[in-house]
Image 1 (cartoon, rainbow, N blue to C red):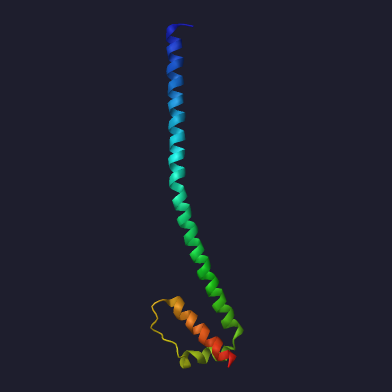
Image 2: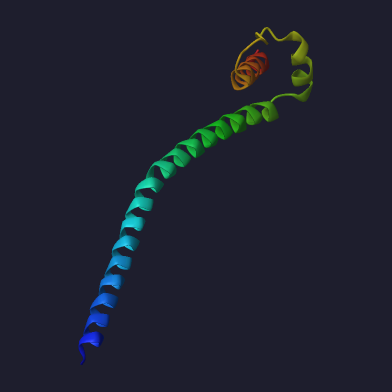
Length: 103
């Protein structure tokens, strides 16, 4: 083996090792950035699922009630319609409807 062949093999081995090191560093860097994003998405989806569960509960209450009572309930409700949160307002309306049904 000549000197130039030996030096070429050493240089190529060094380049390959640097490429492998940079690849591992990039994977570690990316994996570290993904974890907070995954947690944020998980929290977002948990909130959305809880919101959907509340909506299903409300819809079940409405479906179980008498349709005539529900149509008339818009006029005779004693619920504050100035609620800041629409979900809160919906919950109050459904609770009032359920109370009227139980009477």
